[in-house]
Length: 143
View 1 (cartoon, rainbow, N blue to C red):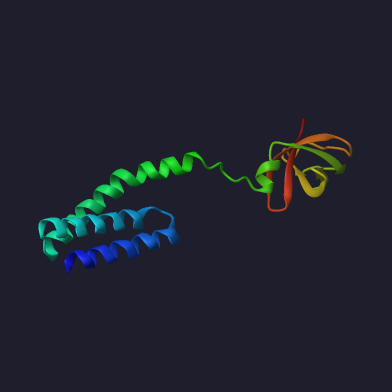
View 2 (tube, one colour; view 1 turned 45 degrees about the vertical axis):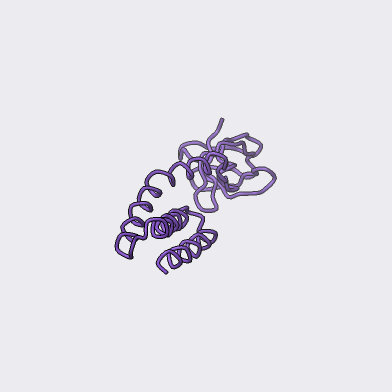
């Protein structure tokens, strides 16, 4: 009866991994399956099979999980949001930009803007570089 309970617990926890995707439940499910196997093969009772579960789960979490995470994360390119993509890019001044404000066109969209260096003044038509996005305001610097 002990192996069947460990087997069911392992399957339930592994199915739960599908919802989380962090590999922790997968490792715990693997530990439960090891406990089920140990209990069935060696006739271990509750106490020894629980110890086997704890040891196997700890080894899987410490040894296998980091390898799986690295392999998974290696193939994923980080997502860059709209504002992250325009930082470092060009903009064209539409209305005079100084330390108080102004407007620029970035990739076809109008943005409120301020000079990154408060002493700079940029006139309409000037090409500038987007240094930072602060809220809905682009902080720009003359090139």
